[in-house]
Amino acid sequence: MEIPQLKPSDRSREYDSYSDELRSEVVKGWLFDGLPHRTLDREVLGLDSAVSKGYQSMGILHFLGMKREFQGLFNGASFSEAIQHLQKDHQDFSAIIKYIDPTKKTAGNGTLESLIKTEESEIKKAQNDSSENRLKRIAAAKKNPERIRVYSYTYKRNPDIVAEALARASGKCERCKNKAPFVRASDNSPYLEVHHVKSLVNGGEDSLENVMAICPNCHREMHFGTIA
Image (cartoon, rainbow, N blue to C red; front, side, top):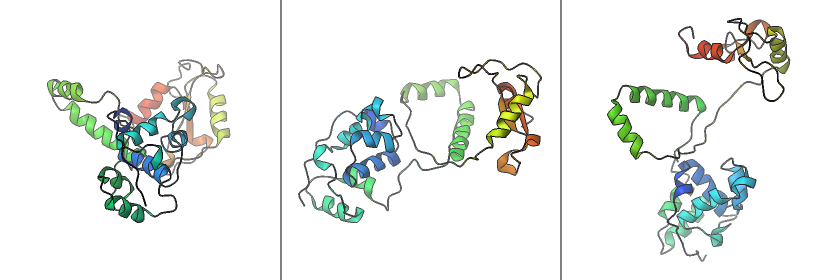
């Protein structure tokens, strides 16, 4: 098999904006499935391809040196077969092999819950540090945060219970008894949030007896305040 010439770009903005896991999916989608840039933006990076126009995945691939000649190059081949071809070539494909080697775990996998816990731990650590050290890290940090993919499960709630709880509240928070703080832009209805008194994850029922329609302030306090 003849391997095309790598033509790496100096522009790293798109490459730096995504996790190793997402880069890996872009590389595999390009080399093995021959997916066009717009499809990669939409299906892998989760973007509106009508807006991004495929430039994000294109930027990732171009930084690694893969232009049009690499699209679908390994269609029908296994990862191990592709790696063998790349390793035999005179060019250095190590930066690309790491994204298609199934034995190498790429960063970025995780659940939303683990991400939140990690972030909370890091915030606590930053709060315990000095302002001087925080400002130094801020000055050296990237302005555009890395985009990662997380996996999470949620519950399919009964829409009738949500609607009935909001109707029962009649525009007033069922906890603090104050009026809803604003109206929804979508339908001009009072903005309240339906909260499960005993959370679903802890075995609470999705029932009218276990929900309250409350204002956003009370809702945050219920989850993060001292009464949580």
